[in-house]
Length: 327
Image (cartoon, rainbow, N blue to C red; front, side, top):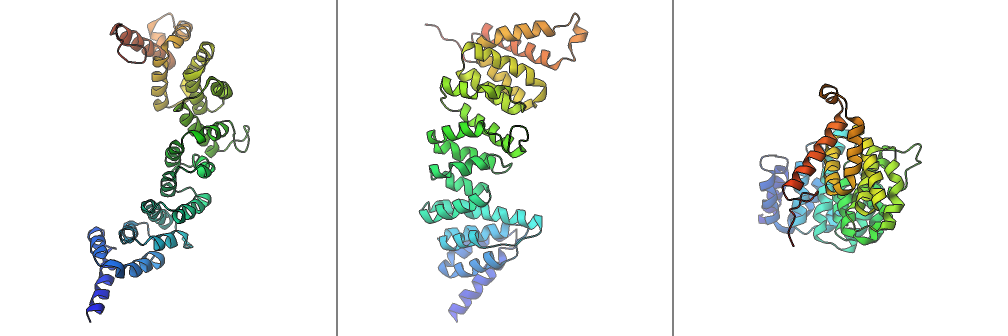
């Protein structure tokens, strides 16, 4: 009788997961029930109806993780699902990502192999985050593909940071390889190449790396060109830096405010190289009257950069905003 009461209690608690108000409390109560709650939770997760309201199924995943039910979570992730409704599919992906994240608590080969197979089918943020913690080089190609995904791109960047130096050469290749071709490049390929360049700019690149990437400063995609110019400013010779500054000025009208702000910071940090180019461009654009000047947003941008650099110099800072120190 007592066993029957316990089983009934678990059924009631599993049903309470469907309550947005009481779901979190039900998780704690189910965990307190111990291993007897695993099978009812498994049925709820594998055979329950997916929904755009995904929190109840996420709570089931959280309870199973606390109960140590790794095999059930792996079974759920590999369980074939046929979900036609896009809202329900979105909700179920949130549950799958939660399952992938909590599996990071095991960090063993079983988890790694299942998640890697999932990643090779579809880039999922939770899967990438957990695999990234392994820092395994064989996942690099999969992380690189995920860079082109709107949702998974950020986690893929972080995973490649964790891989470290072994990712440098593949990132170089990714940055230089438009897919399917330079003439007909896909939006995901553009995102992937720009992301690869951003990651490369964080590394200690050599002058040779800079030369290999220099052609990308002329890329027809403004974001890729800007990212390549940043690398040229970091590792290029003086002549390459000045060419990069000219290219940044050229693409300014084509980039958004976020990139313009980044460009301003890069120019200030390399103002020793940028000054000559900026002075020339300001003189070329400078109209005869103040009234004619205002519509030229590039000119206004360059003047603002120069004023800030001059002000920082007067205040005792270098062109990168760092206070100068005496010897």
